[in-house]
Amino acid sequence: MIELLCELFEIEPSVREAALRAQARVATLAYPAQAHVKANVLRAFYDQGLNESDLAGSSGYGYDDAARAGYEALIARIFGVERALARLSIVSGTHAIVTALAACVRPGDALIAVAGRPYDTLRNAICDAPESLVEHGVRYREIALRDDGALDLDAIARAVREDDVRAIFVQRSRGYAPRPSLDIAACAELFTTVKAVAPHVAILVDNCYGELVEAREPTHVGADLVMGSLIKNLGGSLAPAGGYVAGRAELVERIAARLYAPGLGAALGPSLGFGRAFVQGLFVAPLVVEQTLRGLDFAAALFAELGFAVDPLPGARRTDIVQAIRLGSTERLQRFAAGLQRAMPLNARFRPEPGAVPGYVDQVIMSGGAFVGGATIELSCDAPLRPPYEVYLQGGVLSEHTVVGAMFAAQAVVA
Image 1 (cartoon, rainbow, N blue to C red):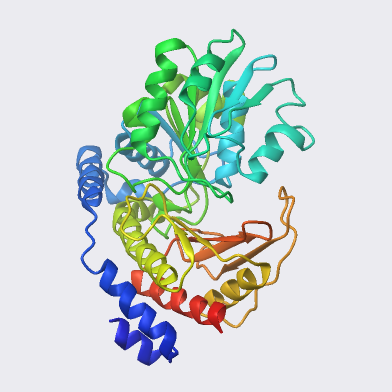
Image 2 (cartoon, one colour; image 1 turned 60 degrees about the vertical axis):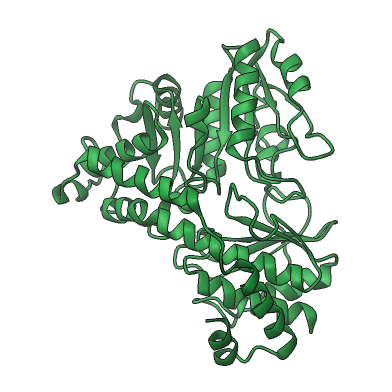
């Protein structure tokens, strides 16, 4: 396959040779967790027993929307939780997270981010933007990761003993930061530590990019709530928009009241005829996630062969759909983005340029050409123009598409 793609897309000899070596490194990789994920999703559909007539959805207020109800029940089954809220009216992962934090942490209570500084737009919403949580009286603290990138469990255990702590926030994925993403085993150890000393403290997890990557989700090992986007992993590249929260019923109902209105809660919210896309996207999501993991392993191997630092390493256990590649300069970041853009199914003739992004201090360069705008389960990359000059490669519905994109990006970087 690599030889065929190199021939079809006229890949230059040095990148072609590195790609062949990379393919040899990843050809025998297996993804055993995906067997568990697929079985879990199939069982959820079997147990739910949806009918085709359930997919029609509603308009207006959305009362008694069978598509919405069935979809949320499927998500709750997959995560092993009491309730899920999955809505078009939650427009992003950040929106889902901030709504959940605002609903679960009251003015005067403390929220602790235990995996270091959150990604820029979220931290801005918590601390700095007008109408931020801090402006509304939430006490906010952060506990840095250890030098080796692990959670500082001793510091966390001391912090959650404080009387004012209502919740901890856990960002699983690395965001735009040179840190490791947190796997489920690390999450389980954290949750056990917190519940042992402060069982009343709610554990709220940013699950973006991590859904369906490992055999278990944070809610299977003790998280009270997970939040994320429906145009990432769970959407299977078919969901047109939306976000979700899933976990304890009392917390989900509180979030619904915050999202809509007290007294209305989760009773309204139309699916607007998109029920089929949501449900079908969820059904194929395990396959799409596996394709993404295969493509990212190749990209990691390719850039490692070319002498760049990558994280995770090819073949390492993955906990999300993000591949960090350390390029070392602004010029290489721009070349990478331009090269990757040439592989996009849409807007391939565009040239990415750095620009300001709301909530980010530094300029960011992005590459993407998704069928669903901003859907990072489709192939894309983001890179803040700041040291250590890492690019974050995400998604890829077809592993071959990621292979071509990675080779185009490599050609541009080493030219």
